[in-house]
Length: 115
Image (cartoon, rainbow, N blue to C red):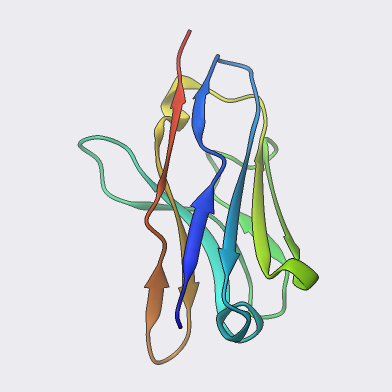
């Protein structure tokens, strides 16, 4: 079955850290391009970070230097380490798996950065 499950969201103070996880089915994790997107209230969904086809992490300008993308192939899990969080990082964060034929989305996990 196709499955993408995010976890790790929550409430954190500005300057704090969170680590998001995306657990995927083995078939998707091994064959699809994996990445993270987010959508803040009243805004369009935007790319946060993704792996290239060659496996190199890439980042949006707004998070580069603060967020780190990684993966654990044994656990079929992708991670997003988020440091130095800002209020503008508040959004629902979604895991996405892309192929030429289609894309799969997780259900999203809420990240709220507020004092």
